[in-house]
Image (tube, rainbow, N blue to C red; front, side, top):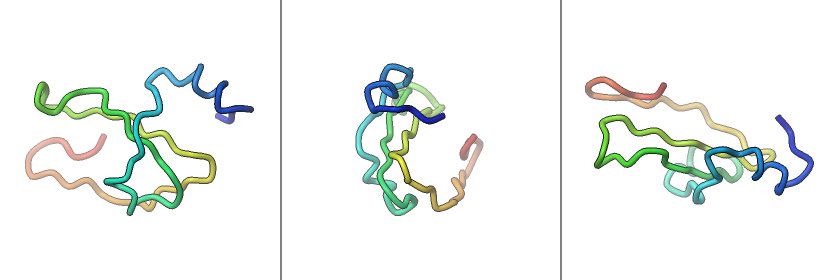
Length: 72
């Protein structure tokens, strides 16, 4: 969905933008932001919301997992 302004997007974004996604920047062309929704030390499932700046693209990658999980 496209929004006319950043303010309009922020009103609609239920998860929040999060912080700059520097740790995973190699997988993106452009800027992305990662907002963890769970704490890894408190749950076995890590959930996060990724927000993309306009024009940002994902360089496809695979999340391998030794047991269960991966990426949903």
